[in-house]
Amino acid sequence: MFGFFKKNKGPFSATLRPSGQTITVKGGSSENLLKAALDAGIKWPYSCRVGSCGTCKCKLASGQIKPLNDFSYVLSGEELDAGYILACQTMLKSDIEVEVETLDGANGVDLAKSRSLDGTITQVTPLTHDIVEVQIELDGNLDDYLAGQYADLALPGVVDRARSYSFSRAPSQGKPNQVSFFIRRVKNGKLTEWLHSADRVGERIVLDGPHGSFYLRDPSGPILLVAGGSGLAPIRALLQQIADEGRAIDTTLIFGARTQKDLYCLDDINSFASRSKGKFQFIPVLSVETNETGWPGAVGNCPDAITPDMLELENSHAYLCGPPIMIDAAVDRLKAIGLKDTQIFFDKFLDASSMPGGRA
Ligand SMILES: Cc1cc2nc3c(=O)[nH]c(=O)nc-3n(C[C@H](O)[C@H](O)[C@H](O)COP(=O)(O)OP(=O)(O)OC[C@H]3O[C@@H](n4cnc5c(N)ncnc54)[C@H](O)[C@@H]3O)c2cc1C
Ligand code: FES
Image (cartoon, rainbow, N blue to C red):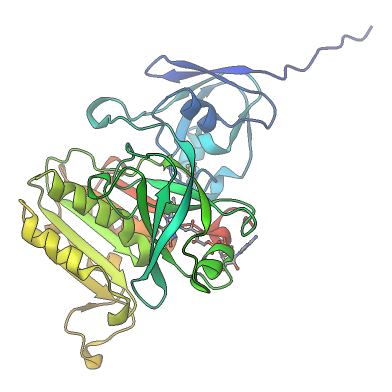
């Protein structure tokens, strides 16, 4: 006699350790663990949401899951052996228990739930030959994002999926319905080629945000900021927040670019230098210039400019933003110096070419 068991299609429960919170996750491929947690108001750390950055990792203690993408793209062999998974790439096949360090406690801040708002592009200002600042006036207020976070911008009819962009201003710097972004032109990139190729003032967009867990923690030592290219956007927002709140934080900013004409926002950086209550050191690093081309400053790749004297091993935090290759090199360097994972925060500016499986 044959027994037929009905396959359990969910929904399933995920119990989080050590907090003990339990959330419900839809079965099948309709909902991943990260989305269910964020919808339930859990402050789960995340950045890319496409399985590329590793920020959402957690440890599976029990239960069965179905990975959407191969975790080994970002998790090490040791992490995989220890049971780590990526929440944004995890569907549930049973009830599970996971261990995750949520953003409550010492570094807890009020992370606003994301929402969708329509808006209009009101200004596009060139910052360099391939980076523009885009100002957007929203139809409603977005007054509770944090400096460092990002939003998804959708342009129906131009791109079929939204692209992520970091807010380039601290909320304290503008009206609650005004936001701005630094957007670099990417060769053959759908959204950025469209934006850079004609006057786009007056075009309508849809913004979804805020997103991400890249924001200023309470440091007990000096902080290091490393920005590459348009990665200066959230870093400028952090500098504005520090100055506007009058915080006495010793800060080193390393800004990586190709040539002298790729440096921008130097007035903002000077303004921070004069307003900062802590010590401030600015190190622009150019990868294509040489001292023979008349550049008197540092040359090479910006992660190589990180030195131990910029940091206090137990107390410092490092904030990194820019291309994935730069972030990976900077994280390696910081770890070699002795910083722990918990002291390093980053947003990788991934595009379709650097996501697992690509995304058109
Ligand atoms: C959290 C986050 C924050 C970000 N913040 C910023 C920011 O502040 N400023 C900024 O400039 N950028 C930022 N980015 C990058 C941004 O989201 C876009 O990816 C970037 O602007 C390119 O968009 P695009 O539509 O022009 O390019 P896309 O059309 O997405 O193409 C990008 C590149 O990938 C190639 N490509 C397209 N499809 C595939 C495929 N299937 N396989 C392989 N290659 C493919 C294209 O030819 C092109 O070279 C951020 C990214 C993330 C994840
Ligand atoms: S948020 Fe899951 S890997 Fe980036």
